[in-house]
Image (cartoon, rainbow, N blue to C red; front, side, top):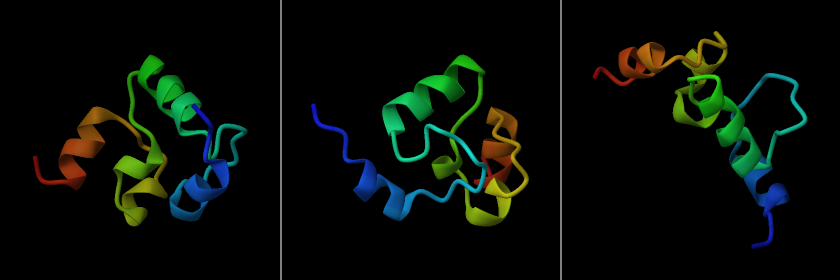
Length: 63
């Protein structure tokens, strides 16, 4: 499968400087290994806190 990094970057809302930005498969794997979710799972105002925990996700989406 071909990576669509340039297309991914257009919709990536991550503000953290990271080498995985736009390479979603690496980003998701990294975050899940750390027991958290990537920036794209959060509204922009929550993403800026860098709290990528499952608890922050549930709170952000009212779950």
